[in-house]
Image (tube, rainbow, N blue to C red):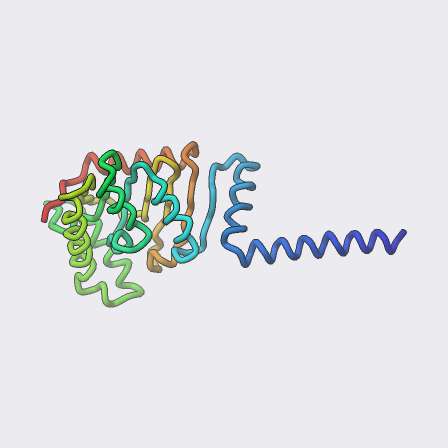
Length: 220
């Protein structure tokens, strides 16, 4: 009897170890279990990724499936990469698809607090290359590229002057949030994906809409 119990316990322990190793190694399995545990705990979160690289496949799939999208971001470099290429592809043949994009205001805010300058100070603490104003020029370059697409598609672009809290992507399916740290690049920050019915979806979606209303139209 003792040998039987020991054998069962060993099998259970071995199964748990295998499960934990699989979850740790596989991004996909981690995402599945995160969704299951989220439902058990009544938290509508689909996944948490340790960094941008781990989240890319999931984010790209959500962007591809979106019927509309809203993006609040910092430099905007990511908008030129494969993750968001379907935004421009959809607009070329589907005029019902819309994209609203918010990038930082790089010009003098006219007496208001310059939040982009604050972000530049943070970046300078770990990357001196941002101390020469290059962040502003990178943002303007990305803005010009987006505006060139906007002439032929349903892309609306505005410039904001509020704290750059992180990258927010809102779609009709989910919300993807990458909170920026003051000591790391965005690519090294965690990525959280919330389902549409979650309170975080509602709160950050509302934040986007409020900032959108208060922001300036982008110009070439």
